[in-house]
Length: 87
Image (tube, rainbow, N blue to C red; front, side):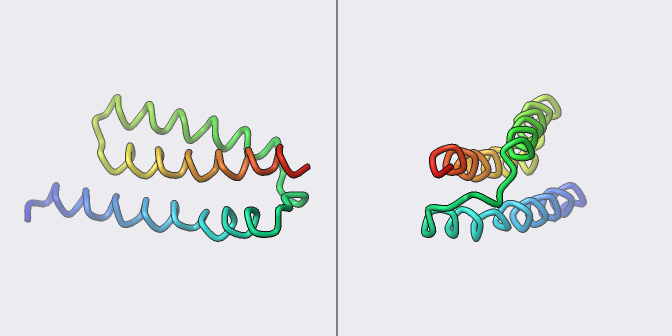
């Protein structure tokens, strides 16, 4: 493996860990049908930031940044939709 391969691997591992951290919240919100303790404003800002990180990933052509942020955006958007749905 080249040094660039190791850098990419570190990025993918870091992104995987931070992205999968959202899964328990998605599952809990889905199962309980309650999102009363989740801040709508925070999740709107967070989803906006993740969307910008995704654009940034495409601009710098970084696969770890693109993959992990697209996945995080999907999971965070699910939480946001559930928040708006289960008010």
